[in-house]
Length: 195
Image (cartoon, rainbow, N blue to C red; front, side, top):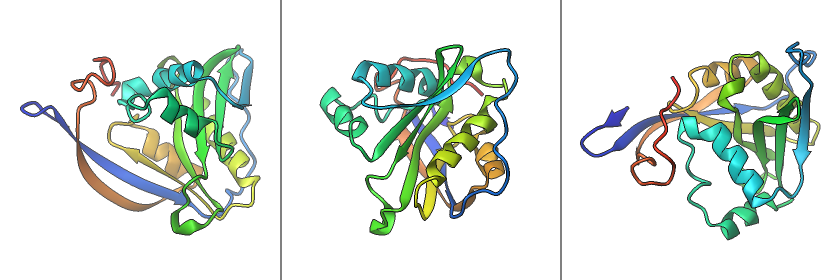
């Protein structure tokens, strides 16, 4: 919700976790008459990361990494505990996910934060979301982990929360916060959100 007088956004944040590997067979990639590939990008360049982050996140007002300096961002994305995966469709980046184990809650090194996950707008609604989240979970659970967690919010795609719940996450917390609209702060372009 936007407060027109102050350009503030009221954001409802939902925290989700998964404490055991989902049971079942990983669904196949959807038949889009396309070549679909999920790859880890090791040592991504700043330009590549900023491009995929904007491609996926701008419609949902992702701004945190945008306001970082190149040096700050490089420190994160070059850390061995941060793993970045890109979903490609016919060789074009269609989405990305970031698994981060740098700052585990309770100092448990077996916690992984799904820090970012999403599809580029032109790939939404084509059946890729379920395949992508399940593939990322399969990658995460291939490690000796105790828990994978994430947060989503009311600015994200309307189906984000239900997608996470269907994948096997459970809600463990909620909060409401107020942020200044990053578009009015000129952190990101004044793009319309998708709803």
